[in-house]
Length: 516
Image (cartoon, rainbow, N blue to C red):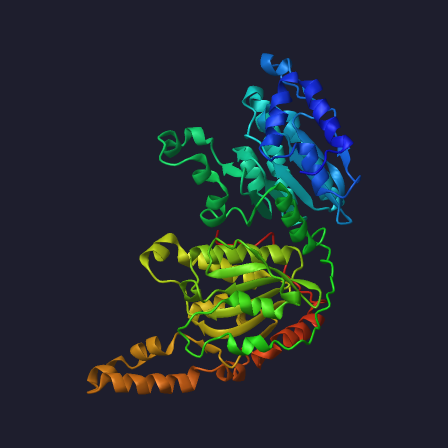
């Protein structure tokens, strides 16, 4: 760990002065590889840029135990400063003060700085490390926490909110962090629980431990709460800074254009050989994305959750873009419940922050089965359709291979208002695959045939000749062009440039009713 600065020492002295019993807590915090709240803020912000608020605030509880201990700041460090030259608002819970629990003044202090962010139209980065509600303070704590949740909800869709989970976060603190646009979990100490794990029967009985229940692995691959997992605290801070680099300060601003040395009209020769000639063979769509975007840099989000779809940030011609892409090497790229929700949330996030979405399509359909049907694939799949149709940002789509049925419609088709749709020659836009279509259309003919295999093969070939290439869709105006794969980057950038000024008029309404 880096050498402590004078402000770090001041932080320690202040805590010890407030409560000598905390001396061991701070030391143990550092021994475990964790920083104090002030150290985390200093590591996040540019040097000497932090402006603190409410440094001397104290709790107002009359509880006997708390009355004897009234630490300055009430367990949270909050203020604003510069991150890579951009003004941001931030706060960090201090686990060494009442285990980071949220009392009345603690919650009000966070609410105050978040409200400042809303008025100033600045991003918020919250560092969470607290055990939920402070039980000693009773209903006064609960009321202030409700106000905190309200201001977080009010900021949603207006300014970026990023949460770093660097310790145990439970109860209301976990709920508040869950309202963020992006949640980053520390792999070593980051844990999230809705209820204390000591009340979970499986933990009490020893069937599972706390890490299995609410650790980084669970929330990145099972619950889908964590968009990324950090190796350590500095890595979490770096991830937050990188995500923020793709985002504007607020919903009325545009993301920064960051030019690279990558030529805008660079040929993507590697794409000529990525898609197998056999339409049933898998390939890695992330290789396609990396070949197209600036400098091959694709920041994938939720990489361990719903792996059959890829989402994340990249740049084209220096402009921030959101990527949504089927992943043929997982479940053949089929859409299911989790992938639909994952994509829908990301599309709406991009729409909020004026980030164009580029969609790469290779989808054979929605995943079949009773688990999906009873789990609500109709409702969840509709979320993705809704998100694309509602979005007013530039939308560009590349069909690399399969685009079948309702899944084709769900993946930013022309009919849902996509601005620029192209296909490679290998693209297949159809209601379903040739085999399935022939079995339905020519069922009686196949039953009467003396050589079913030969007849089936001929009918499949006939169907593919009729519907198995992208030119049929292009003739109907559903594709703007059929291009060679090597031209993908050039064509997308040419289409994106005039779309920077895109504006859509929307009829007045309170809001739509997305099928949640």
